Length: 402
Image 1: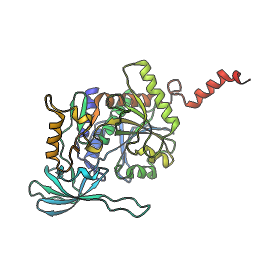
Image 2: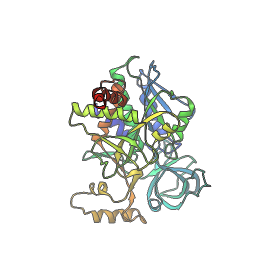
Image 3: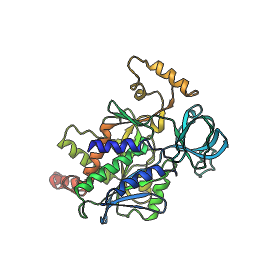
């Protein structure tokens, strides 16, 4: 089981994807669904994907949600045989661009490396208006025909696992996609026919520029009003939310706090797993490094919370932290690593574009927690609402008030 889940993770986190250009991830999910007769795949009018068990019906389904895009460049136009103008969709700080290596993906015909030579910062919007996208001039290694809409990603190695950690071009949020599909698959194996928990997977588009796919899903009718949504994310790790300490029950993000009742119940499920298996690790944290789709779902009237994986090199930005140092070869000093990176990424100093990093044990722990959420969210013996606990406390101790 673990080997199959890791296969999904390695395949997905290596796919080129960008906001509005998630075609390769969508194609992967479509191939996965076609091989499983018990799974229905549908799309809303905005291209968001919904996976559900064939014939499943309920008033309050559980939704595992994740987004299919990652910060990347999209070609605007070709300037010359070896140069293109591209806009960058997503949040990466300006100082990481000029001099950094990229790769142009040309349909099914291959790819071409290049380098960012100039950055045009996004224009400041009018008060109250959303911001625009940065634009970059890319110099390609050889004459290449590029079409508007082609994707350029950072030129990073293929996903690999080393010392218990995944290093990949796009953990955010393709690791969430992999975890959602893996948990959904295991739940369907255990309950292949209608009846039992109704767990669905919603995979959204265009998250990196303001949850556009999630907002569209809320408006398209693909989510029942009584649904419970568990958004999956990979969130910037901090000192108090370390990589390797387990998946995180996320109580809020930089923008808002999530549904307290649903968050409490999932925390109770995580605690129940740990009581049964002390080797299971999990965390309960406010993760303020960014804003996730749970905030959008909450604001638009749905019951939502978030589970996340602590992430190193958030949005591929390596600031010289311990995660990068821990990967140096034996005998090679941190100073030598930094000098090499400075040569590869001029203008970035010790900061440079790098693979994102998650813990494999955190990933498998997230899948285990999701499976138990699917099984137990509506089992009061395992995940009672907080009100039930308060009522029991009052009944037991009310004599103190007489």
